[in-house]
Amino acid sequence: MNVIEFKNVSKRFVLHRDRRDSIQERVAGLLRPRAQGEEFWALRDVSFSVAPGESIGLVGHNGAGKSTALKLMTRILTPNEGTVHMAGRVAALLELGSGFHPDLSGRENVFLYGSLMGFSRRDMQERMDSIVEFADIGNFLDTEIKHYSSGMYTRLAFAVATAVDPDILITDEVLAVGDEAFQRKCMERIFRFRRMGKTIVFVSHALEIVRTLCDQAVWLDHGMARMVGPAGEVVDAYLADVNRQEQERLTRQRARSAGESPTAEQEQENDATPYRRGSREVEITRVELLDTAGNERSVFQTHEAVTVRMHYLAHEPVPYPVFGIALHHENDLWLTGPNTSFAGMDIPLVTGTGYVDYHIPALPLLTGRYLLSVAVYDETMLHPYDHHDRLYRIVVQSRGLRERYGIMSLAGTWNWCAQNGHAEA
Ligand SMILES: Nc1ncnc2c1ncn2[C@@H]1O[C@H](COP(=O)(O)OP(=O)(O)OP(=O)(O)O)[C@@H](O)[C@H]1O
Ligand SMILES: [Mg+2]
Image (cartoon, rainbow, N blue to C red; front, side, top):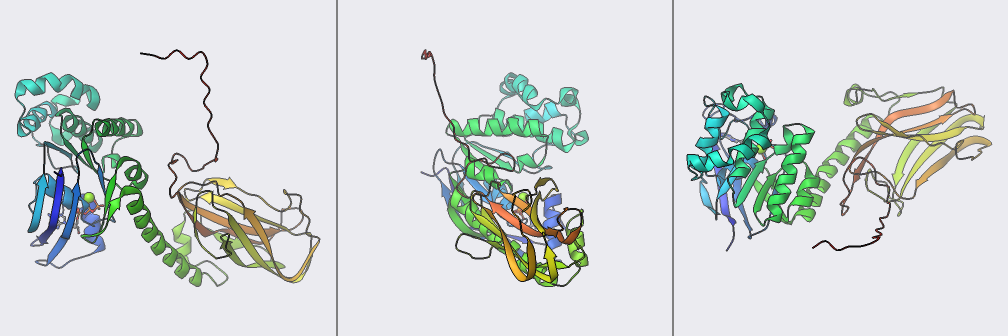
């Protein structure tokens, strides 16, 4: 017997007037403008099931239908076709604006929520202390909800939803609001629920958490279930698709930037305006990122070998040039800047064409986007012949790797040594 069952579920919206529930939905709407009165399917023929003790993640681009699926689970919406079956008590933490009554105080909302879940006032009174402690919103408990900040709202909503002992806990982007400390507290509680064998339905753009927390995942794409399966595989497939689109965008961008100066669009893409400078006695004519098979790629896995190949053209004989690269994180943190001089490699003279390779045996970066610069300088490393500042992008994925904090992976090993072991009862 499944805890959750979606059988050929379709949900249609008719847009009589522009009614969007959240900022996210408004954004999604902007991306795909629709005419008034138009019908459209937010979900189309979606089927999946969740067995007891399993957790499921829903992933997909903005407007893919994730929140709609959750609203069907909580019966805020009903399907136009197909059936939704839920077994057990369902508590949901949906987007802001659904769930609480704006004119009631936080405390009154706790009682109201409890009564909807079948708990008496006394039941909720007993839980009040732990709810208040978890939400940590101080005196605001007796203030009307409409005066809450989005963070406070989420704090209270999460505290209440998890206090009513649900069998199924549904969360929609809890991590999007609230500060770090609160997010961590929420995640701890979510993981504790999972250990208790409860079912968690988790919607998030934080894919690494979906991978760790969920057994299964559904990838929604324009309302259709593009893939249903083990969470890791679905996340990988979704990421691969996102990256493929990214690659295509990069290829188009590269084609445009084949000229001398960066395009206006490139300038806009990065606040710290990437650009090319130098006197060009020797130029870097082409940059390739090669995998071990010698294929050119822009998406690499953590710990994979990468070779940065810089093809050059010397317009005149240039003695002792220094070739180098730099890597920046997309948020502009400068990660590294190796060059041939630091490595003690002398290139006495370049004439005509050739290439210089920088070989990275195991890429120590975690999932993310990184900017690559390449350059050739004179012997003093003060004068640039040709410097391509952050003009190339590397996308890194950490497929199959559980490590996910920070931006790098040292590939270290752990060792445990127990001394004077007294086994605790
Ligand atoms: N009540 C509604 N009336 C009309 N259209 C709606 C309604 N609710 C959602 N939609 C539309 O249905 C589509 C799916 O929306 P949904 O909120 O489920 O997406 P989502 O996957 O949660 O996206 P996000 O990642 O941005 O939260 C969107 O195009 C949205 O604009
Ligand atoms: Mg949503």
